[in-house]
Image (tube, rainbow, N blue to C red):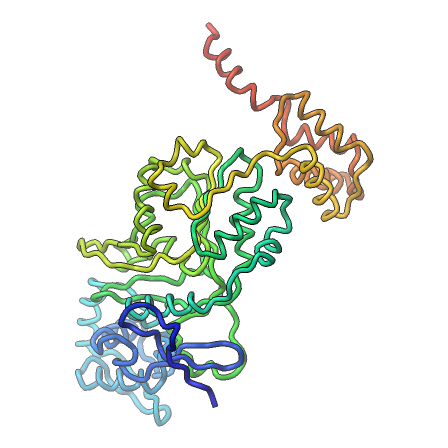
Length: 455
């Protein structure tokens, strides 16, 4: 027997409570709804969705419809029976005591066409916006606290200053935002990605949300990783919710201001929620901040209120606004001068700021030796010292990514020559030339000036 759990003292803010939960194994799951009241949706919304589904096939069974709507069999049979009373469906015969075979009627076809012109969504039944808010907040309150050892372990692949690890861990543990800045190639993006390792627990999110007849698609196979459920007991789960690994969503230079609001598809006639809403409960990494196809300050203004109040306002195409939770750790990484891409009002709302500087010669050597060991290679005496000297001779700044990239190119070379990987002056020379080329990047401005001055 499964234990039903009502929301307790740690229930979310607001009048709406999350669904009834039950435990099987070590997982808490939402209990399947057996009527429209418990489902939090109107009878009309569910019957319209079912009718649109029926219009996609010649005939179908109750089991088939229940599987695609992610609703209990008996609940779907009641919806289908009511559609039959309304002459939208024809009953072709009985399959089991709680299942029949149906076909859409001519009247049903006409109505489904009108419904599709309004909203083309066909899929798992949605949940209400209020249920999504309550469920998300309730789950986040129950997540394990991120301890310093968790953050340290997540960043173990990187050789960083202790202060950088400490502040990054504090941001993740507190749920506050993290602003990483400093020269390119020193691990800012890697920090944002690797911190995700420290997030324990899974998250229930809905396939879709219904708002006044509009459908907002939440679950995205490109962004979310489905988590396994224990064997047995899954039949009692409200399958409108899907259990995922806490998300890591990365947005780079392709990010636009429009991508931070609901995206309406005129073809499908429903909405896709923005990336930061898909990142709720996890990490939203904005990489290469300041290089998006939009002015940095326009993006800053878009984030100020959500960072302050942990809610965001999204707009439907009718102009109606809805309020959704903004509950994730935002990590912003830039190699531009913060003074050029931020202002004091924005920085005041950032939880933690970390300068990820270029490595010292000692840290460069530690990074090199660490990555070589990870690749199963030994480092000849004096090799790292000669590399550091060559950086200085060619007027190149030390970067934390260089040891990884040089060693990986040595491995590429040895594989190409069908040899066992080996670090030596010869293989490193080829890797150096293939990585840096013959021209120092610091000479680019000079070369451009000479080109422009050419008669």
